Image (cartoon, rainbow, N blue to C red):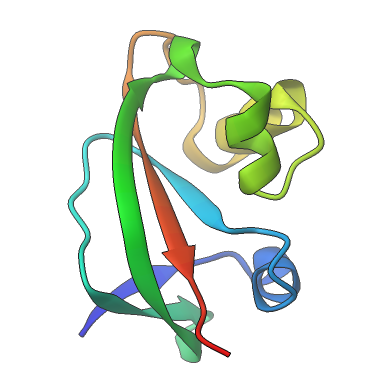
Length: 101
């Protein structure tokens, strides 16, 4: 089964269902069920609901909220911390997932 890795700070928001997406640099393909990991350990299994590709400049406050942030500015700051400088024309992949009850 494919794995998606997260920084440890995102584990709790994911498990509490506050973070329902992950935004990854580049064009990625995910489908079916995946294992969510952090620091090399699996913390949940999730079902991919949909995958959307956008340019950085097309991201919205709604994208930020589903990713667990208060607004777009917070999301862009986190993406910059994780990936370094992102050009506004670079592609990102928004992966919508659901953790079964």
